[in-house]
Length: 377
Ligand SMILES: Nc1ncnc2c1ncn2[C@@H]1O[C@H](COP(=O)(O)OP(=O)(O)OP(=O)(O)O)[C@@H](O)[C@H]1O
Ligand SMILES: [Mg+2]
Image (tube, protein in one colour):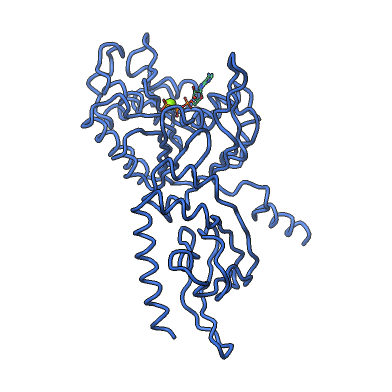
C-alpha cells in the first residue's frame, strides 16, 4: 500500500517536478565582453506544452537567438534550469547534449548551415547516421522521402552550393525532420527566403504542428507571427507578460515591456476577496491564473452574482476610468486559488494616456459592464 502511494506521488505533480514539455526556470545568460558581463537573458521563466506552435518575436538584439540556443543546448545558461521532457538539459555535457538533441530536436537555422562538402541527401542522412537511427538502406529511402516532402528531391545529389537559398532551407528542414523528432526549434527559418517561399515553408510548419510536433520559431515576419498559436515577446532579455498581451493586445511592444516591469504578482486563496465594492480604487488587475467571481453587494446584505472571469481577462478598470468607488466586489472562486498581475493606479493612467486605442478598448468594456450591472440591480 505504501508503495502504491509512493508510485502515485511520483506520477502526480509535485511543485518541483516539471509539468510541461519545456520548462525554463530563472534562466540567465551573461556574455563576457570587454566591457564586462552583458546580460542577454535576465532570468527567464517560461513553460511550453506539447503540441504548441510558438512564435518568438522581439527587436534585433533582444535575446531571441540566445533563448533558442539555450533550448537546443547549442549554448549553455550562466545560471538557471532548463527541463525538456522532465530532463534537465542544463546538466548535460557536450556529448550527452548532442546525442539527446539528435533524437529529440530538429534545429533549423537562418543560414541553413548545411555541410558544404556533402551532397543534399548526405546532409539529410547525417542525423540518422549520427544517432544510428534506421538501417542504412532505410536512411537513404527516408532522406529521399523527406526531400520529396519539401520539394527538392530533384536536387538530392547536388552540393549545397549548387542550389538556391530557398532550396537550401528546404534541405535544412528535411534534415531537421530526419530522426522524426517531437520538437522543432527554428531561428528565423524564413529570414532569407522570398515571401512566397517563406509562406510555403510556413505552410509546411503548420502541417507538422497538425501532426503533433511542438514547434518554436523565432521570426521577424509579423504576418507569420500572427499565424502561430502562441506568441512570446522578448525585449532586452526579458519576456513580456503573456497575459498582458492577451488582455491589452493594442499596446505597442515598448509599452508591453514597460508595463510588464510595473506589474506585481499577487495571489489569493480560494474564496478570498480581491477588491471590495464601494472602496477607493487602487490597482488594475489582470488574471494570470484561476477564476474570479464578480459580485454586487446589495444594501440588505444580499449578493448578486455578476460573472466569472478567466486568465487573460481583467477587472478593476471601472472605478479608475469613471471615477468614484469600486462598482462591484471581486474574489477568487471558491474552487481555486487565483494569481493576478496588479498595475498601480498611476501606471494605469500612464498606460491609457500612452495608448489611445487601449483607452478606447477599456472604455468599451466599462460601458458593457455598466449596462450589465444596471440590468441586475
Ligand atoms: N557571443 C556574444 N558575445 C557577446 N554578446 C553577445 C553574444 N551573442 C549575442 N550577444 C548580445 O546579446 C544580445 C542578444 O543577442 P541575440 O543574438 O540573442 O539577439 P536576437 O534577438 O537574436 O537579435 P537578431 O534579431 O538581430 O537576431 C545582443 O545585444 C547581442 O549583441
Ligand atoms: Mg537572432
